[in-house]
Length: 446
Ligand code: ADP
Ligand code: MG
Image (cartoon, rainbow, N blue to C red; front, side, top):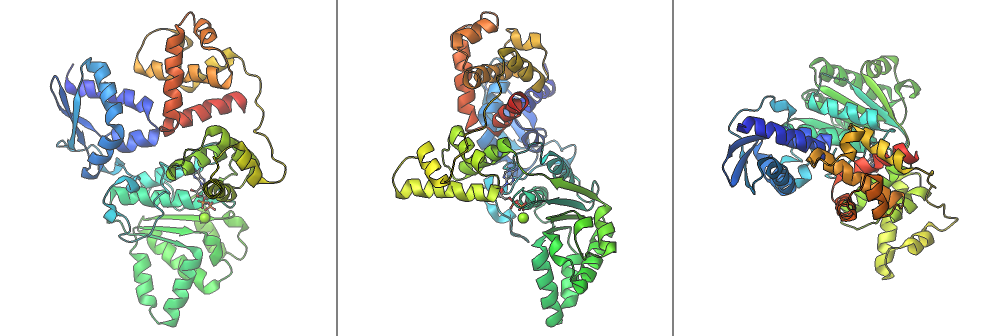
């Protein structure tokens, strides 16, 4: 097999093992530059990514490559020599992972944690996420403006900044303006009073991308809307991307000029719904991980079951950590219930689900055939879903290892045990697995 074909195989396998965003932005553009019996050199399309990919995906890439070569390779990562097919398609949101953060903050301040990688996707925000990633990859062409709206804490600011991170990752020199409707307003007022409106105009009209958060703030302020209208047009006409967020859709923003409304509606308007229990749990786990706090899934669920609002949930979680530290007690259900005070709702009950239903759900989630999952072929794209299946049967349904082995046609219980352990281990480290498990559980338990 030549090295290109081999790498194609490895890549299609990796694609099944990481989240779509990670695959597309980090791995899809790598190449196999050279390979010997013991060493493979992998080309990354951007120098910035060399360290990142090596740090995060060395083991995964090595294992996958070893599977195909049946050798024990060591990997070397370099900047690739062959040109990339499509440089725009490149990465990069994970600015916080680059040791030298000089790339950010060239022209804007973004929260380093508000990246796509840290954004959990579920039915309530899936459309908004898809649109935000599309806009990041092809700014100014796909949906312009992108208008995201929704209630407090649903992730509007997070998604908007994720677009900024991504675009700056591709092109650190990109002139992005990120501000709130309120800051925009204050800046105009300031410019008028100091007679510096020319500079103001110049700054905004030269932007490559304009991100305005909580744009509803400018409603009713006519001079501001006037200026905004011209700014918007100038940017829009040069095919630069505009992204806006608001707490309500354009048509419901009172005192917003008609011509602005129709401009906003001329792009893509998407609402983000309230996060459901599963999504709140996932978000909380992400927040805990960022704080390097080892929050168990059960405790995350207990908190998420009792608080609907993400901001409150985060606040409460911080309180849990700090009380556990000051009182020198462990974080457990008792401490959490104490802090929640009032009557604590239990974690939503689960429907009775049968082994066969779990089997079917896993099969269709990973797009496999039943025979593949039940079979014994040990290809990687099968072994992971199989391990997920073991895990769900054991942990969610409480089926014993022996029974699981029997259910799957006489598999050894140590194999099952190994799988369950593997997935439990991955759950705290691997977003993709967590996403998969949450996805499958949503299908099963609603
Ligand atoms: P909004 O701007 O809609 O009021 P934010 O973007 O400020 O909401 O989100 C509030 C908090 O919740 C932030 O800490 C954000 O990171 C977090 N958050 C909201 N949605 C998600 C999500 N889907 N995944 C991860 N974190 C989220
Ligand atoms: Mg916000």
